[in-house]
Image 1 (cartoon, helix red, strand yellow):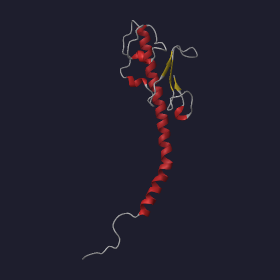
Image 2: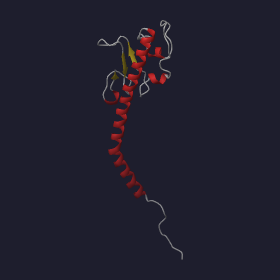
Image 3: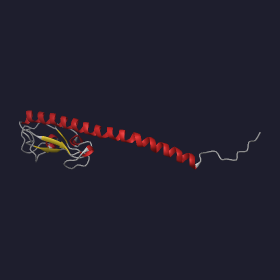
Image 4: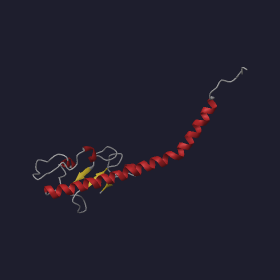
Length: 140
């Protein structure tokens, strides 16, 4: 027995549009939660990286007798500064560890502010001083 279909198999344009509208509506509610979590995760990762670098700087000070100067920077954890005789590094093997989650270099200054031995700061997603949300500066 042969069937005659007057309609071709597949989706109509109207069905596709309805599915796209439904997907768009769902994403409008879900996307902010996903990206909000991503922002918090990047900030937490930046703080964890700063803590790791702080630990390596403390080991460097114990072995070499001092922290790197601002001009020597965090690169002193990877390559020996010329003026540091007792350097026993590298203290960090991967130069990528000296970048924040957004791919920007951490800002290092020695001495630090408010009596700290040094400051390490991530400038956030925009790589500039200040900001809010994902662009907020993160420090030790």
